[in-house]
Structure formats: structure tokens, C-alpha cells
Length: 494
Image 1 (spheres, rainbow, N blue to C red):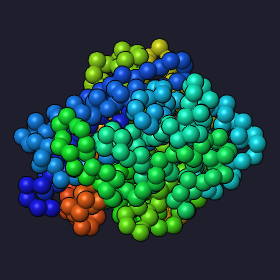
Image 2: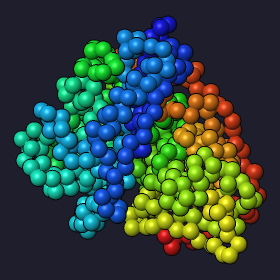
Image 3: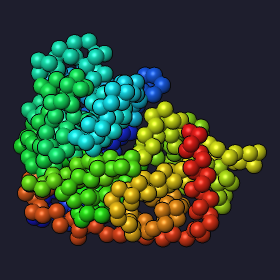
Image 4: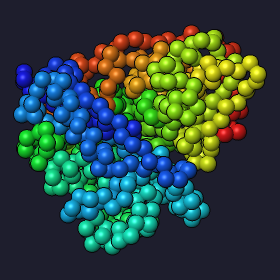
């Protein structure tokens, strides 16, 4: 990358938007962050206002540029990473949302998924998509919007309505409505894409009653999708040239380019991904098969385990129970006791994801007595986050037939030393934390730079990745066995 050229990375997440400006040495020189309102219309329902999301993106771009001491004219390319399965629907001409977006955590379509399972179609759906029939994914959310929003189905059938995950919405807005596009990694999370043909599947569209005319074009993860137009903080003509779902972007940003390399991201949820190379590996252990990225004519696939609640459990301790004032206080509180006192927490506040796939499961504290304190509860929450990751790792070892000598970690909770040490203890392997925990932004920036020709090879990212600390297992085998046995009993009850 030439000196003086910069790449803008947009990381649009579940609770807020991050924007980072990276320089020619892949250093973050400016950042912006804004949270936005979460809407909970009914129990089990979670929605976002698409216009609120867009407003945070514009503000964060301006904030990041100011902090970097730059103007929009200094930006050579834009990369995007995003919360994935969240489902939007808007008017193609005006750009006005037809309804609030239905968030990936939303469980309202559980009855629809159960009905489809009862029809015996899940095996075929899984073979084509690599996914299971669960409310987590976009297709049943889109079907709900088309059924319940007045006029939406007619508009979708005539091509007047656009469906999109958040990446699609952002490109549509960045280009002033000119581009309706997604990349293969995000498309692979919809239940509508055949992950071998890398195109929308007509039979799946019929199954979910989704008009194909409403779907965006499927593109690679590094190419020019369009250029900026009509922005407040950016000039016209900047190429938007890289996109990947947040977890795939983190896998890319962690330089997991070889089969068998794996990472875990601790965000609102927790997500464990392993690069499986150019051939999709079908899971028999409850994991998902997903597209990692496509660059040029090469597609990289991944195995994924998803836990719906991770950092969100700490937010719940703060906002729901009032046990802490700030999320960062949880480590100090949990460290006030030597262990959880036998208390186990199952973070099923939005059902259980992989490898259990129980949308009806609910959060659970087990093992409390009169001696239980708020410190024990805080420690149990952190341990529950790690124990659910261990379930995913066990399934991943089974599916891949590989031992995993180390996991790279990122996301906000990866800064928590107590959590990372306990994670290494229950996994029984090293946990490696990089110096730059914002690997999603790093991945998005590199994909955008690759797509715009700023960088010529993904290998350039290896020189930008550096380890900060390695956590190695210290727990005695008997203690580990007891933790895992208590956890298994609690999961059965959740």
C-alpha cells in the first residue's frame, strides 16, 4: 500500500457501529463508535431501525476521519463487515424501510422452523446450505416480513422491494441506491444460497416463499460493488470493494488462511470458526458449514459454532440485574472469589445455538445457596461463556478430524484475562490473543483493499498480525472434569 493511502473499515454490529481508518502499515489511525437503540416489541423479538444504523455509520465515519486528521479525499477504499443474519426490507426506489429489521437474535419464527422440520425438509436444506432450520437465519425472518407487513409481498414480487442483510443495506446507502448486492459469506447465512453453486436456489426460495426478484446480486468478498455517492463525510467515487460477515471477517483478520486454523470471537454472541479449505465439510456434530470468503476464483469454507449469548450476558448483569455499573467491572467482581462456589450459568437467554440447537432453552443459574454472592454469579457468567465454547470446540474436533493446538481469540471480552485463562483451562489448549483485538475491522479493511487493488495478496495481513499474550492450561484434570460434568447437567435442565 502506498504511503498516504488509507482504507476505511465499517464494522456494523448488533449493539453499535465501529468505523476505523487504517494506514499503509495497517495501523488504526482513527476510530469512531456509536451505539443505537435495541427494540424488543414482544418477548423473544429483537428489532433494529435501519435508518438508525445508517445514521451511526455516517457519524462514525466523520468521527474516525476527524481523529485521524484526514478528509474523505484521503480514503482509497472501503471495506464492510456486519452482523449477519439480521434481515431488512426496504422500498427500492425511495430507500425507505418497510419495517424495522429483524435481528439475528429474534426467535419469533420458531414455529415456522418447527413446521418445516415436521415436513421432513431439513436434511435437504442442510445439504444445500450447510445450515439448520432455526430462527437464527434470515429466510424465515424475511418470510415473516413478507407475510405480516402490508403490501410487502406484492412489492417483493414486482421487484419494488429489496431484501438485504446489513451489508446490503450499507452498500445501497453508500452508493445512493445504485447497488443492491451482497457477498457470498453473508448470503451463505440466509438459508437461501446453495453453498456449492454460490447462487440463490430456486427450490429454497419456493420453500420459504421468497420472491427471487427481491434478492440482491451475490458477489465475491473482494471486488468493487459500487462507489460512494451523496455522502456527508466522503466524496463521490470511493470504491466499496470488500465485504464479509463479521465472523468470516474476523477469521480473515486473524490470518487463518490455512485449513485447520481457528479463531473465537467474543462479542454479543460467541463464534468459533475453523478454516476447512476449498471444500465444504458437512457437520455431523451440530455445527454449521459456511462460506468463509471468495477472492477471485477461490472459495474458502469454514465450520462454525455459534453461541447466541456471550458479551450480552455481561450486559444483562449490568442492565437487567444491576450487579455492575460498567461491563468492564465484571472481571474485578468475578476475581473477588477463588471460584464460582459450585454455581453454573447457562447463557441460554436467546435459546441454545450450536451444537444443541434448542430455541426453547432458557437461561439458568444452578447450584446457588445462602453463601452465593454477586461475585459468584459474575464468575459463573464468565465461566458459562467459556464452557459453551468448549462444547463448540469438541464438536469441531469431531467434524474436522483435527486436533486444535491453539485458538486465536478476539472481540471485546477477549481482553478479560480471567475469562481467557478459564477458557484455556476448559479447552485444554492454548488461547492466543493478538495485539489488535479489532480483527473484524482488520479483515474488512484488507478485503476492501484487495478488492480495490490497494493490496495484491491476502498474505500481506500476516505481517500485520502479532500475538499479545498466550494463555496456557493450568487447571488440574480432576477440576476440569468436575466443571464439565456440572455444565452438562445444567445444559440438560436449561
